[in-house]
Image 1 (spheres, rainbow, N blue to C red):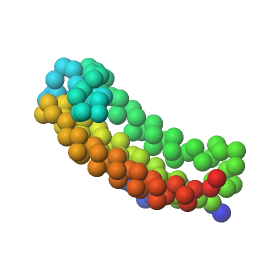
Image 2: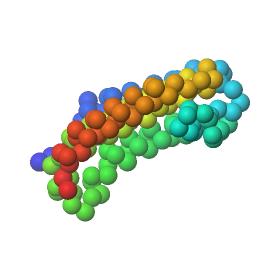
Image 3: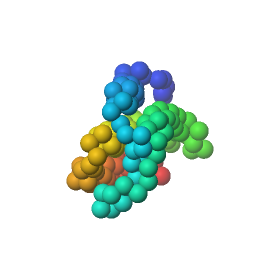
Length: 141
């Protein structure tokens, strides 16, 4: 069983990372000097970061998450079992990347507009749980 790298399988994650960089370039001049990066349960910001730091957090997180979730099955001590379900690992990777991209877009929009849409975050978290709940049982134990 050969698990060669298939560039077609990585189009979506790479596209998300490139779009995140383009969004950062587009929104950077429109953002205030400090942007909220963490919200409490009521949707009120309780942690702020500088404009550059707030943008770079996700621009570093997305590629790091992509690399980590792509290659972690290869360093697993039970690699032979993990590689049998490598496509499921990649689907979970894509779900996580789409979710973090979605949160990144919401944070950029809320920082530029000054208001967070908590319903959008709740819907995103609900979809994350539904999708992960569908694929996690397919992974080897």
